[in-house]
Length: 315
Image (cartoon, rainbow, N blue to C red; front, side, top):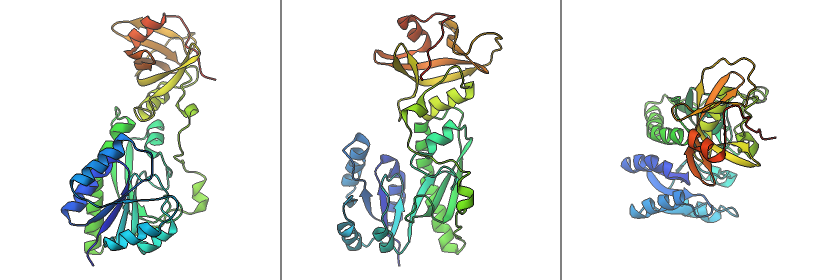
């Protein structure tokens, strides 16, 4: 039987997967998330409409209508990528367990809804694009194929999402080739005794985004700003009873004994705004405020910062 995929998604980042399946004449339809309208989803709908690709709606209340439409369109396999709903057991059974998810981490590490944020925050140097079976427990199904992708030191979360999306066709091609040659092997993920040692990529809270200039290292601050750029609006630090968003920071090597972390140590047009931290200094490159977006020097000038002043910390 020829494979006809129903692709479950809600982001334009799935379009390379859509095009790959179209070229192989293996796309039955796209199943969209049930969320409030947003530019990303609307752009996806416009593309699907233009190419006359059937769109189905995944509803919170029932799978009966969805399954009926999947059957009508001849969808016999499922592919999940950037889909923000749990796939319920009725849909899994409809595909006879032949439904897979693409998750950007080396499972079981970084299971959960925000794996790229947490990997960037932790300073990962590679990300693994993993294809696994969909079961009722999220991100827990057997693994069939994967591809490793290096992370550039300047990658932000948005950069990494786009790079991962570009690798999805290669991962699908690997799956199809292994199926054709009979070399595809599904490996069960580690059991419960391992799981208490892994990172879980939970939803990000505001406190996860807050910088402590007195305690955080240069690397921690730089990695946090990368991870939070741009989807989450950057990292945060408290300044004059408000939260300021930091979109980019750079590690600066320095050895200033006796200077309290959190102190502004340099401020000029050439070197920008430098703040002492526990193991060096960071330059605040791009700052977002209610008044606009500024480099560190302009931010300091407009808001009255001077060398020797201490940055307030969120508590």
